[in-house]
Length: 117
Image (tube, rainbow, N blue to C red):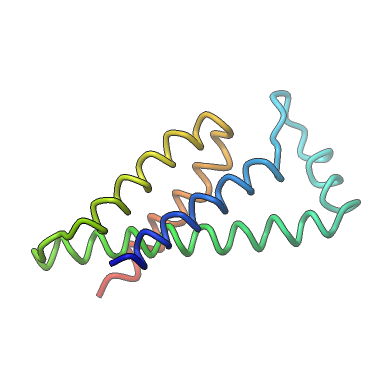
């Protein structure tokens, strides 16, 4: 379905925004990172919202893939495009921010696995 591709694009875009809005510097100091969010609560609210939407969209793609594989349903072209967007965005976002990308994708994988019935 085209909706699956839309989920993949929205999840990829939200992951990109999260990696840009929540930079993690190489000598990581938790106090500075936390202080940045305390002094700019709008950035924290925007980043938290984008994180939540992003991991839900990515989890929906994981859920769809697991459902299609376990039920042995045929893949259509849109499902394959959604899978490719999911995988390509993973590798692109790792280049932008490893920790932020791993956070979103790990949450989405765990939530995607848990939501399978």
